Amino acid sequence: MAIQIKVPDVGTTVEEVTLIKWRKNQGDFIKKGEIIAEIETDKAVVELESIAEGKILKILCKEGDVIKKGETIAYVGDEGEVIEIPEKIQPKISPALKALADKLGVDLSKVKGSGPDGTITRKDILEARGKLADKQGMMEETVIMPDYQKSVMKTVIASHREIPPVHFTSFIDMEKVLEFREKILRQEKIKIIFDAFFIFACSRAIKVFPEMQHYILEGTLRKRDQISIAFAVSSDRKLYLPVIRDCDRKSIMEIALQTNDIINRINEGKLLGDDVTSGCFLVSNLGMYPVEFFDAMIYPGHSGALAIGSISKKPVVIGDSIVIKNICNITLSCDHRIINGSVAVSFLKNVKDIIENGLFMEE
Image 1 (tube, rainbow, N blue to C red):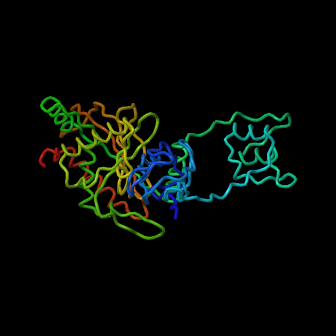
Image 2 (tube, rainbow, N blue to C red):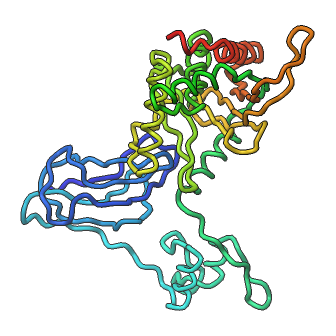
Image 3 (tube, rainbow, N blue to C red):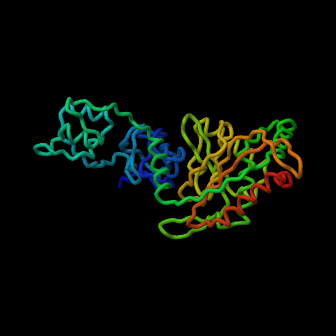
């Protein structure tokens, strides 16, 4: 009996994914557990394994199609097996209006026709798009939103709607970080990204304040079993949030090498679904831009986020003297449902102490 290959729940926060590549063709033989296709979620590119062994009898969608979780994309069965696929009812619509729908990006299968016998009218299409023509039949130009931006939009809405944030800002003396970074670059030829130092510091601070491992899911307070921290990476105008797992058990050099590897794989389009799951906290660095302060969004499933601004030379009072130091501003955002103010500021102080005292050099 033919088995349906469906899009599984791959840990994404959105209902739709994009099929970007078929690794097998219709008519090929495939083993159970073998990769049949690659799909892109709101977080990463994920390899889709076949849950059955046999011949690929029918492929139902093409590369580039946007599909829902749970939707069947292929059938696998025995040689010569015949499958019956229910035909989709085609809506009644004129060729001209179909062309308009294609131009506006309207999915006709989701449009209910208001004309005779369910015929789709121009008004139906415009209403589905959320735009109405003016008296002359003219309308504003419509820009089709890329799939990855739709995913970002849904995540931002979920964060804004569900998570009440509280923000705390401080500054950090970055002298020891800069000295150590220059030393490693000179001796080991390894460039440590600044994110690595904050991932190190935040992971140690989370061990002191385990509340930072908590998150709320469907009204229930839960705790991550690992201290795994995500860091924001932008590539080709897309945002990725890869995760460093068990980073409280890793040295600064181990974290540095892993972050560099992940960034390389993002640039090569080789990030895997497992690279972006189970984080409890986010580090977001905009220090490469002329940004001194910003509030990082708290990602659903996280307890908070640390926003890192640019490093600049500033006067600092030490005793009765004024000295010039390399300073950057950091802003902690926390889910106020689970993190109160005293825990948040104590956590922030702990991060500051680890960075300023160079404790990353001792492990």
